Image 1 (cartoon, helix red, strand yellow):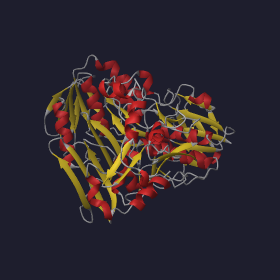
Image 2 (tube, each protein chain N blue to C red):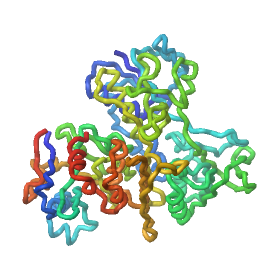
Image 3 (cartoon, rainbow over the protein chains, first blue to last red):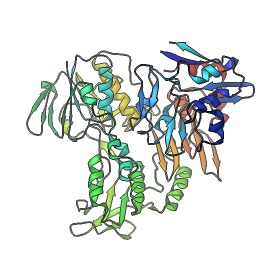
Image 4 (cartoon, rainbow over the protein chains, first blue to last red):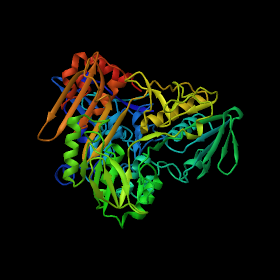
Length: 146
Length: 421
């Protein structure tokens, strides 16, 4: 199984990962259209943390023993058998925020655009390399087999 | 091995999924008095409010039992248990034998012995059948009194408000949500609920339900009389231990379990709201009737039954996430200690946006946290509580609105990023 690893000493805080994540999860997949026309604008599933000169890009760790999966009362969260990623059925999610309460990384966000749902990294399972890893200019995010 | 599970909610599912992640050789049978495939009890308020489709109440897909090779006996009560004979007897007399049993019978609503409690129009609010019963009456009802301003009472009240009913909550304590919130948080939420048009009466309770056959009014201990056509009883939930009382099981408030979810009897396991288990914060045994705890306990029980020792129950943590009048809130651990001795409090309140955050610290470790209005990144705090992390060096940052893993000292951050599960 492939997982994203964070190398914070290489992160320059450019936040390109956030932008590309947002575009990859938009309906048009077009950076200009997303920012100018898509309303509500989709949200990035990444959190860039920054304090002084330190920064890093954080996304779901797709844990072996995921707290979110146990806490999800609607049954919206599940593990994709092939990739091992923790994925979400947005139709089922009711926005109870139990996953936010238990995730020790704090990587699940609230999305309150059309309907209240939680929003998390899907490891870009349709792509060979997750977009944030691919577009990171400084290899602060890398993909490794675990 | 023949595995028998009594109860068909989240703890049972946790066990089934844990067992089947290892192998398919064991026979699994689930018995429940409810006729439905597994559904999410916390979603019943969403169903009543018509915020979800009826099919969305179901927690797993319709082929769950078939796919997991689980035999179901649904809609039948267990009459008696004979642990010495490794057998249970159903209400129709049928005997079911097992090698290993999981007791996950959940909780039952507490119903006070009130005058008039058996009148038509009095309902509980914990199960799918409760919603069905309430829904069948709801069209002819204008006004509802909800007894109890806890989580269930508030959810019921809001759902009924969304169905355009007049709703009055009657709460015995000084504030609503008194077990999971503090006064500041409760006040914010009470104001918001009142703004939505829900009436709240605190420091008061229903003394008597009046009516001929059907509910016509309630009389409160303050002397007030409220005319109403429906009463929802939402005072609390107690472990469903009735059938185990004379069985030799060690029971306190709930069935007492160890870190492997074993009871005092051999080959008898228990999980979920029916148990009394170790609490991480108090160090005592108590009931921790919350969804994540039930799933995990079920998972531990299932794993242990089939010899997978990877999962151990290290202790539970009381926590709740609830939106009240569209304000998200999260409460974890101890937020309202009876004495303030020995506790350090860090908090931040924004009067304009009504955002409130409070962290309770004891001996440099977080023991409780409260988030109102903004719950972003709350789980990081939950993780610090669960793992008993010393927070001395970054205490002040805990309630900052920029708090994140970056607020942790680098070596601790790296440890938490790479050594968690």
